[in-house]
Image (cartoon, rainbow, N blue to C red; front, side, top):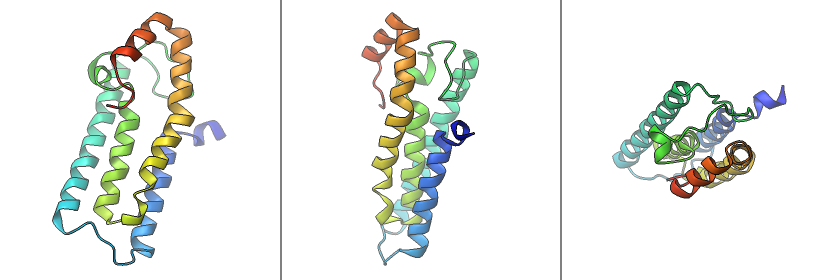
Amino acid sequence: MLKWIDMPPVWLAGALALAWWQSTALGMGLSFGPVWADLLGGMLVGGGLLLIALALFEMRRHRTTVIPHQEADRLVTSGIFKRSRNPIYLGDSLILTGMILYWDAVLALPLVPILVWILEKRFIEPEEARLRRKFVAGFTRYAQETRRWL
């Protein structure tokens, strides 16, 4: 059961809940500014959702799992995965950043690097270790050609 709770969307939802709580309960009169933060926040959320959708489409097209704790059937290096080894996690980070801007949750900004650190330690590093073991030469070449985040 804990394996299904320890999933990236749950961590993202927790960070979003903390950011929203900070903006409503502990706003302290801080603000990013009028319109630009809403616009940039919306663009970041939209970009994050697009990245996630493109990654899910590519993984489904290759018939491999999107569940972080499961063994991948194939190494996906096409589509959005040509640009980033972790577009879903990048999308999660963009969504959190965008919502923090949109909600004017200034004090919640440290949640972004915290979420990135959690995603790296709990999901990315174990996933890449499994991929490295299963697709030895293919993953080594892919990791040399494609950056982890951008």
